[in-house]
Amino acid sequence: MTSISLPASLTPQTSLRALNVLKDLPRVADLIEVCFSGTMDREGRRYIREMRQAGQQTVVQRWATRLGEGTALPLTGYVWDEGGRIVGNTSLIPFRHSEQRIYLIANVAVHPDFRGRGIARALTERAMQHARQKMADAVWLSVRADNESALGLYASLGFIEQARRTSWDAGSDQPPSSPAKDFEIGPRRRGDWPLQRQWLDAAYPAQLSWHRRWDFSALRPGVAAWLYGWLMDLGPRQWTARRGGNLEGVLSYLPTGHDAVLFAGLAPHASSAALTALLLTARESLPPRPTLSLEFPAGTHDAAIAAAGFRPQRTLVWMRAAT
Image (cartoon, rainbow, N blue to C red; front, side):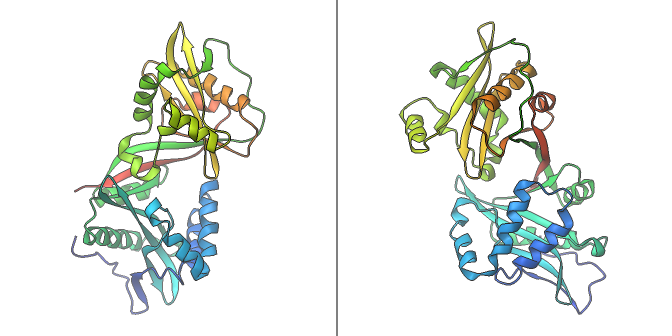
């Protein structure tokens, strides 16, 4: 892409300019909060807090050191400036994965009073141009599944849907009663690993691992997993669901970062009730904590996850720009 379609309403007091990370982040945080406050989940609120703390240069520098870890915090991007007021934004977040340079376009936001003028399109086009000038191997973005106007915009710019994923949370409230004991719930066995890994790869696809950084090495039987558990004090815990002696699913718990995270792998023929039973077992077995989270392909066993007391936080559509 060599040109950007700027809105006809562009005036001498208006500019599409590069983000100034030392000055603009608090105002960008305000804009994102205005635009998405009605749908912002716990992770989004934490993100906004971190952006607001970036007024000090030392904080920005600390963010910069995390770029190699795939930080989701915006150090590059573009804003739409109307007479000194930031009314539009898009962020560009670089990733390195398998020797590929990948850019994620994020935080595309336009103040409600300025929508309908083509600002979001112009900002997204500029971000795409930037990524291609940097010789990106791929350009991605994610958008809420209920944001139909944004889905239409990105499709018109050549983005193609790759996956839909729902984030679920269970709080510290009392879990529902256990369902009928149709399954034998027990610990994961060493011989379960080949099937478990196959099912995990299906539920957590490699095409998105550049962003989510799913690392299941700690779940694999052996010394490495034991060492991980010893270092983390409370290491991975894993449960299996069997019916008639046949393995139907494996649920794994990993304490990572801010959250306690579950990963589910199910056989293609598995009953949804197997997942409910596994999730309830995890909720009953683990120490109380503010949140217990699970991410899973959207529309796959949704009712089973809800039956275990998990609540959907958001469903994201992952899209990749056509080459």
